Amino acid sequence: MSADAVLRLSDVTRVHGTGPHQVHALRGISFTAYAGELVAVMGPSGSGKSTLLTIAGGLDQPTSGSVAVEGTDLTTLSLDARARMRRTSIGYVFQGFNLIPALTAAENVALPRELDGVSARQARAEARKALEEVGIAELADRFPDDMSGGQQQRVAIARAVVGDRRLVLADEPTGALDTETGEEILRLLRARCDAGAAGVLVTHEARHAAWADRVVFLRDGVVVDETGADPVDVLTDHAVR
Image (tube, rainbow, N blue to C red):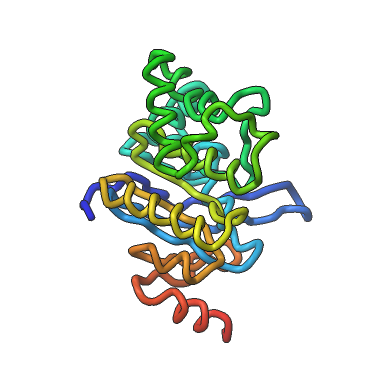
């Protein structure tokens, strides 16, 4: 693991709504993920896990605080500049697959590369390589509606890791996958981090968090624990509080 911080959240808050209907999703979160590191984020439903990820990926803006990816504060960028960062530096695996139905698997994976100016030929070659990495090279020309949920999730993961993404964010990426396939996907995320990327994995499964270098536990929008210990111990500790 490198000492280089790829992702740094500093005193980030996120408030939804106003007045009596306000919901404090995040409360002064400070969080860092380093090059070569996979960080698991755990916590009960409503603890702020997915909000943390959407803010880290520039899909949402914090109410206060700063969010830096490789030293660039996303909160200071225009919508277009944030979108460019997501195409070039940030890979995001959503709970929903967010695939475009009218595009084949290869076209879905190649799209962010083509939008960033990479030639169609190179983008398709990179897409097919990414699909091969996640074990579905033979589905390159198939449309999402002709795939199972697990196959669609693999396409979504290939799209997140295609090209040279320095930050990979994954929100329950194995939810639609069987145990064996889920392990393969986690092995891929682990390998990407070992190769120099920073990864943040939101999960409720201790066995998935075991792939991480560090476990961060959220409750009510606050980091209540951060450890490199066995995630089963972390879960057990917080379950009895």
